[in-house]
Length: 165
Length: 165
DNA sequence: ATCAAAAATTTCGACGTTGAAATTTCTGGG
DNA sequence: CCCAGAAATTTCAACGTCGAAATTTTTGAT
Image (cartoon, rainbow over all chains, first blue to last red; front, side, top):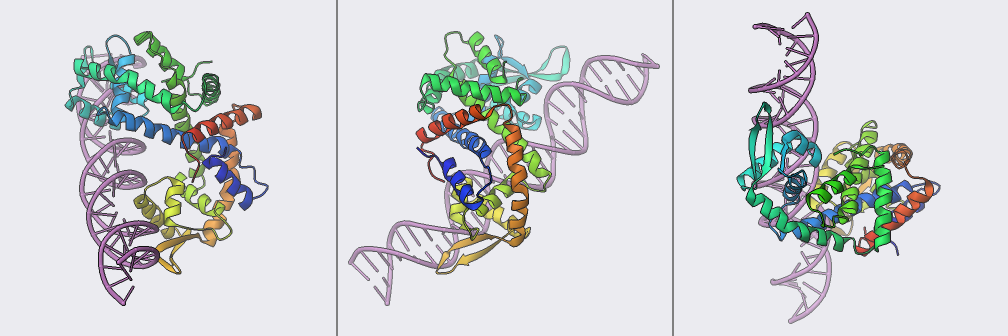
């Protein structure tokens, strides 16, 4: 069965015979798949009253350790957003009462962000459904294929040095 | 070798033992890989004086057929951007002299966009280098692995109905 | 103790996208 | 032939991000 990227590769073969466009077979598919999965996640979370970035922030704090607390810098790099964007996001989460913010004792340069009880309850409520939804989005592959895909993606990511949060 | 997503899965295993977070092993990796590849493409194109979206538009026109001409609607869906964003992009490409825009003869609702000779020369000059760069970004996988990865991604994309441009 | 450099965060302006409303043109049924 | 609805594009306001500059605090060398 053909996907949209096959159609594109066919167009290249016609427009520029002799050109080896095969790298687009991977790069293009990763890009399209990423957007489709994002949309699927967004639709699920919208039903729970959360934007994807909100769930990301709450889930990052939840998995960070018992205290559910991180400083702005670590949150910024974990979420792969600029420091400025992180400030903006935390402003809004504080306003919703899902996190709180306080200077770190002993180092007033740092701001510590924690889940509030309400934030913890919300993310915990949504987490299982979110994973079920992701499983559904991947249902086109069986378990072996999913594992193989994860393995290939890992190998590529490691080669691109994506080894830290 | 561990990648960043393995670290995240390890955090989940500690924070919520018993939770099966494995879908994130695929979804998270696709998302991170997509961003890394985008960055690699962006850096290459910046050296040629092009933004990724500019190259996308020019390449889409180039591979569309002999005439290098498409209407706004088809360009919009090809590039997966809203119609409004497309108008904005074309304004700027016209200003750079890389495309031209004219009403379709016989159907004045439609606007036809074509590569100018200058746009054609530019995208043709950059195309081979762009593919070489993408190949470099994928160099962590050998040919068989790359083909296997493309196949798994295709299967997943087909299951998500990503079969048209 | 002091000061320059580094570190963490916030502020701010520029930019691009989205989604909805508006505009123009076409199509088909009556 | 006319008109309502559909189709293609443009306009516009709201929104979020980035990057750079500014701010505050800490660190280390002298």
